[in-house]
Length: 342
Image (cartoon, rainbow, N blue to C red; front, side, top):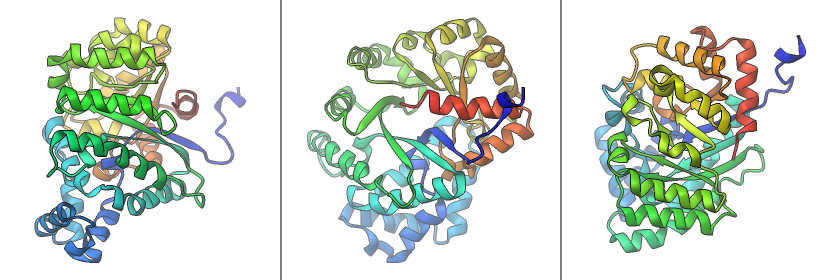
């Protein structure tokens, strides 16, 4: 009985749900902005982004407060990414990734970190679509190179995000890139506002079918803010589901299929309060209870720790404090994260 509840004596955690745009701590981001002001940028586009951000957030406190503010909806919350993505150019990635990885090891005892991102959104927006698509591989290569930080020994794995707000051609090219660069890419995701996914199901299902045919692991943001965004049609192509809280709350009969398919749910409790999905964590307590009863694996992730201020250890702490899990559940989450990593 004791063995079943033991935590590894050497702290060792994995975070399977973290967006690159929300992984840069506001202190790190503001330090980058303020170090040389607009001259910190390596391109005209980046310098312009820095100038605008410094005008809008002249102090670290201003920037931190904006990121931490509870948003009325998930759509409003996703706007925060647009502040960071233009800065994450190939030339800047070494600066950001070093600090992301250092923080993951020192403050979170994380040895495995999956980072997901849309490469298109880190290309120069002044280019036309074809040129931006052509530039995506350089973005991927720069990010992959920047994850090599031997001093902190974090196994960083990259997932490419399809995006519900981007044209079909961009998503097609993103999957092509993921399949072509299997040496760098461990899987795919679909991110962005939820309603366009519902409106473009055929497009995204076709991409997920292609990925599955090529044995490329996949997760997807499904059923986060409303049960209308669950889309069980994706289940045959998935190894994990991002969030999925509405499945357990509104369609618990689907949990049997998730268990039989071995699909793991990536829960990010702090996010659901910051996005206005739930007023508090009581609904998530019911989610974890139903997942446990159904035998569906789940783990805890941070999603966007720079926005919600909760890094991985804090997510486990608030889950314990709010009775989402007990200590045995914490061990299961810890093990599930490694078990279901791509």
